[in-house]
Structure formats: structure tokens, C-alpha cells
Image: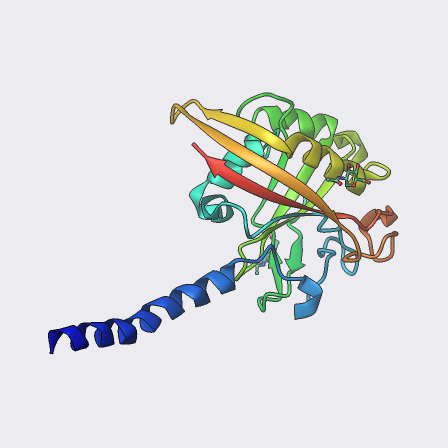
Length: 233
Ligand SMILES: *[C@@H]1O[C@H](CO)[C@@H](O)[C@H](O)[C@H]1NC(C)=O
Ligand SMILES: *[C@@H]1O[C@H](CO)[C@@H](O)[C@H](O)[C@H]1NC(C)=O
């Protein structure tokens, strides 16, 4: 009696436990979903109808803590690769929005981060605000948790922070060059070192190369770089 009942119970119980786990893994384990498949765009909305290219994507296969923007780990990552929050919390110009095809339509950027010139804290980004430099806007994709970035190299304040010639490609390549491989950020207050391992892959065929629909009429090469970031402490 016992010998027959036990195997039957197991056989019935196993599929019930196994299937929800598989479903969850399938849903989350993607780099990102192509915004255009869901009616979105690879250009954000900057000066309607013109937009700036979403030229870097942080893969949804990156560490979940990093992709959860409320955890603060993404900001440590930005600091590790040479960016920080804006100068003393000052913000110049309006937010841009993006439609990532995730069913939410156009959603404002969650934040804007600027090159920190190696100076810790948001003081370093004051130099960027005055002198120009690299910066990016952050747009998380619902469902995949991938983080889309609109990266560009700006002119100085005197030139109204316009994008430098070729500034989308230059900004993207500079950010990626500073991110690939191993980077670390030491948080003084937490007395904790954050370590990040980044791999990069260039993708083509997502944004058409050129300046059609692009803000400031500055052409870009149509490359979107996919970063996969692993985080550890
Ligand atoms: C986006 O930002 C603009 C400018 O600050 C604001 O007027 C608008 O309400 C924001 N949209 C949403 C959906 O938060
Ligand atoms: C991506 O493309 C840029 C521009 O052509 C190039 O400089 C960079 O090395 C490429 N990166 C990778 C990972 O292939």
C-alpha cells in the first residue's frame, strides 16, 4: 500500500511545482524587446517630432539588482563608469520621453546622468554642466527591465548644451569604452566596494543610420550597443 502511494503522489506533485518556475524564467530571460515591435521607437521624443537615438541598452539579462532602479545599484554603476547625478541637483532643460513599445506609451526619462570628470559626488558633474561632456538619459523598459539609454556628447553651457558634431556616436562609444571589462565603485558612506563586469555587443538594423528625425540634425551610424552587466559586492 505505502509502496504504491508514494510514487503516485510524487508524480502528480512534480509538474505542478515545475511549470510556474519555467514560465517565470521564460518571461524575464530576454535582453530587451524591440520597441518598434510594440509600436514604440528607437528615437526618444526630444523636440517633437525630433528625437535622440536610444543608442545603448543595458540588457535584461544583467543582474536583477542593477536593473531595479529603486535599488540604487544602477547609480553606483554609473559612478563606476564615470557618471553621476546632475550638478547639485540642478537640471537644465526639460525631460525627454520614450516609447519603448512596452504598452505604456511615451514615458519621461527617470533620470539624467553626466560625466563626473573623476570627481566624486555630484560636484564633478558641475564641470560637465559648465564645460560640456558626455551625458545620458535613462528609460527602463517595463516587463524586460532592460534599461535604454540616450547617450550624447554635449557642448559647453555657453553653446546651450547642444550636441557636438557626431555627438551621439562619440558619446555612446566613450560610455561603452569606459564600461567594458571590470569597473569598481567604492561607496564611502557604506564603506563598500561595488564591482561590475560589463560585456558589449554592437547591434545594427534597429535604427536607420543618418539624421532623419534626429534632434539637431546630427547624423548617427545606426549602431546600438548592448551591455550586459554583472554586479557583485
Ligand atoms: C513629463 O515631464 C513634463 C515636463 O516636466 C511634465 O509636464 C509631464 O507631466 C511629465 N509627464 C509625465 C507622464 O509624468
Ligand atoms: C561598436 O561600434 C563602434 C563604432 O563603430 C566601435 O568603435 C566599437 O569598437 C564597436 N564595439 C564592439 C563591441 O564591437
